[in-house]
Image (cartoon, rainbow over all chains, first blue to last red; front, side, top):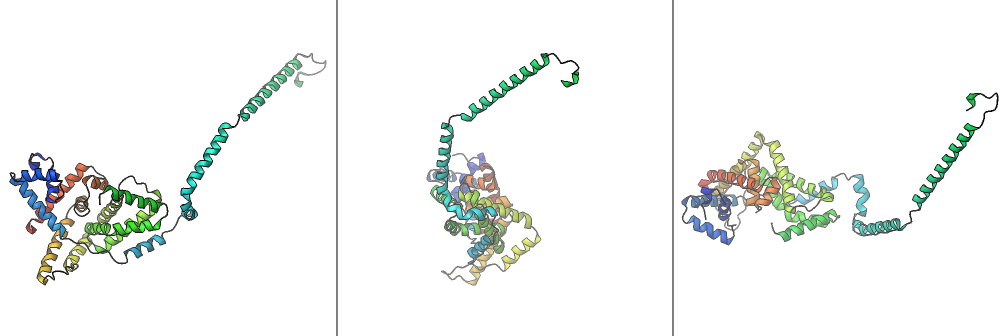
Length: 157
Length: 192
């Protein structure tokens, strides 16, 4: 093993070794290195001192009324109108999802298997309109070719 | 804390909370009330403030239940909220008043319970002085270094998890920790 301090590689192994958190294989490699590297040995010794010092720092116990205060805060939270609306239905959501999916499938299959009548109707209507328009144009042409009666003005057309 | 089985169970509990199961929220609260409160206490070093922040953490967890997605470990998410709140508080409150409170609580400090061995008054005083030194040394660390040390030492988090909590790379976490421990080794050398 190369010196972690000199090479700056695997330096975290020294930290973890000091804390007793390194796996057996790596711990053995570090131990062998420490036996011949005074610098790393000093590092590990000092780091163990830090860990021991930190271990002496016990936190205060959590207040006995922590939960009561928390739930009181939760209850005092204003619920949104959506929340109020859907909250009673929430337990049903899991059941509702497969039902909704089944309904969607049924609707989709009905739509897919329905003959495309509306399109035919549209096409038929369009054809009738074209036919009527052509008739009208024909009629206008015929009117234009009809000799005008005497005395009539050009304003009539 | 880091076992994947525990992760799945916590995430599962949170998903049940999402579905409206209040009892599962109670289970998560039972499990993480102390770790979160203790982490925050060591971060801000003020009992009242740390409990207030811990309440805020669990309140946010509860309020976020409907949008919760188990994208990361539950503890990563939880400590991310806790760290975010602590760093914000430290940023906002880092002033003379906070330092005064720290000094005062060190002098009048809480009595540690050591019931078994019934230590002498002198032993208790020595222990309190040592703890006060540790607290000062930790408090003097930059905020992110402090968070990283506390998560590694007391919550036994992996580098990768700390990185996710602090939103940085693993190598950045290693760098933070090395600098932090370097400072602590100097400050606490006489206690070894």
